[in-house]
Image (cartoon, rainbow, N blue to C red; front, side):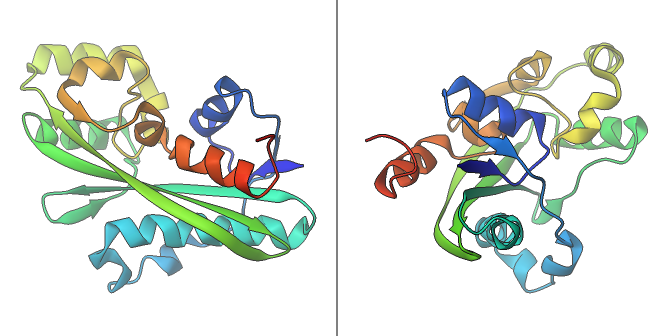
Length: 194
């Protein structure tokens, strides 16, 4: 059985849309403890560290299953960005990122028997357009507190697409999971038909 170690609706949707049968069993990992000052220096590696911790946590409870852990790190202006806690914070974040580029790193790990057997990461380079304050206000009103579930305060698969001038990266990576490397890993380990 394939298990997603996440409660993320976006990650569930990625796997569902790809036709992968899976169960959901969210991990219980102290992400803050893993985001040490040293780890924060390498967003790409941190995305994999968090994904692996989640996969390992659930795999220990479900040793016979193929467990997928995934996480995403947003790097902007030389720092890592966490999820906004309020719409006011989301507004400030989007205002700051307006007209500028940020980098999303999506990490993914596959575990079985309590051990990570495979991991990978993919970047997505995102350039926001210089949208108006009126557009930003309408966007925040339309999207509401659902934006707080995304580290970038946007859903690229929805209205958030209008925030961008340029995007370099796979849609699934932007939504939170490097899909094609994961599917290949699942096939190569016999968890999906080849």
